[in-house]
Image (cartoon, rainbow, N blue to C red; front, side, top):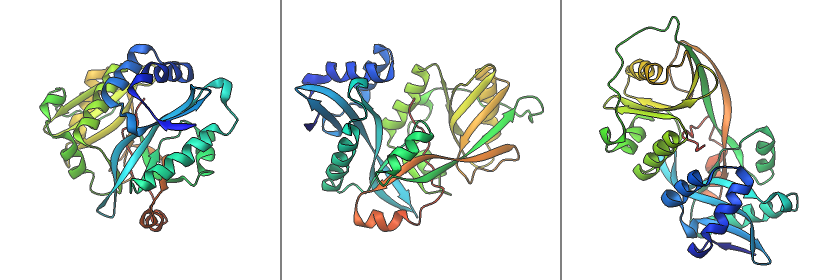
Length: 285
């Protein structure tokens, strides 16, 4: 049986999350205290026991300058004892039906590996999101004045800043609460967040002396100041930056598909055939 979640079974959902992903309880509690919405959480139960679940986080997919109500499908999981039985497939189909009832145009997700890209394509998800993966080495990097680092309070309307400056690409947009959570979640996971009037960057360690910049967003011409701040703050010798395809750089980069979208409504199905190289950004850990 598939239902939306109830506050009364939160502990059971947390236990299922921990069994499937291995995260510590503190991190799981952090998510549930900030982003858990019962009516946006779908649960597959057998004999009164939750065996699979997924979470829908509200957002907007901006395509050709128009904004379409969308969800980010997050933390989909099935208990190890119940995998390979088609349970997640049923949950995905049910979620699509519910999204259509709610007149939500797209469901987007970030597969963790190549196998999952293949899996979700079987449910009509398409890899319409791409990113530049840019490598920047500290040695030889043009040294410019680093910005003064600060934390989220320095940028009260970070979502407005992001939405305004990600203008060259179709992209997934978040409200301020979602962006604040993404920043806090990254810091909670031993990453960092720097922010001032010129922009912001989220980053986390990615190996010895390497730091991954999950997202960077700056006013034109001010990216290098932010990157210098990341070098200073992280102590890394090399940065690996996930950026939109229109991000200008003279550094070495490759292009990779990183997220997928399912067109739910009829208007979305017409649009999705024309979307290529959209930017997702800010996948949660």
